[in-house]
Image (cartoon, rainbow, N blue to C red; front, side):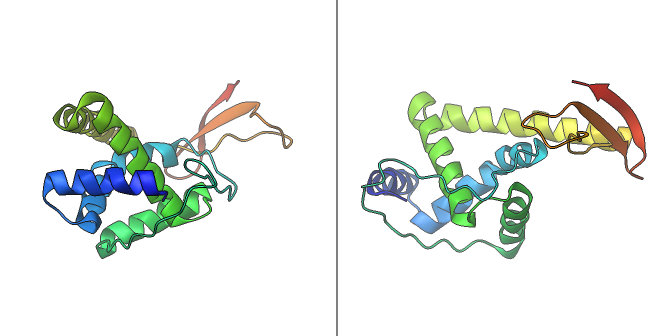
Length: 164
């Protein structure tokens, strides 16, 4: 994480009267829906390393202690997205959250995240009731965009095939 992002995070943690580590854990918990939606879209990052800010900036290290359940979720998302590192995922979440808080205010952004979480959980429940799982887009040959999408049920039998 670069120095300016770390200063923003430290200021945010100070305003919440928490440590940086516990602030990151809180941000991670609030932004789990963001990660789930990102994971659900199946956009693999192919191990790309995303730099934040200017590459010449001094990098700062922070240590975050995630509870075991959250650490497992982070590992799962890391594997599914094929991202370069779990730290990259955390940096992305922190940046999105802090930008949202700066833009709209902390309380308003928390309300927006809560509404988004509620809508996402309702959508997941509806999909679970329909017993349908959307699986990656398949194509007949490797290309930069899929030619058709296949929707599977929980038994991996095709329910629908849609040309794109």
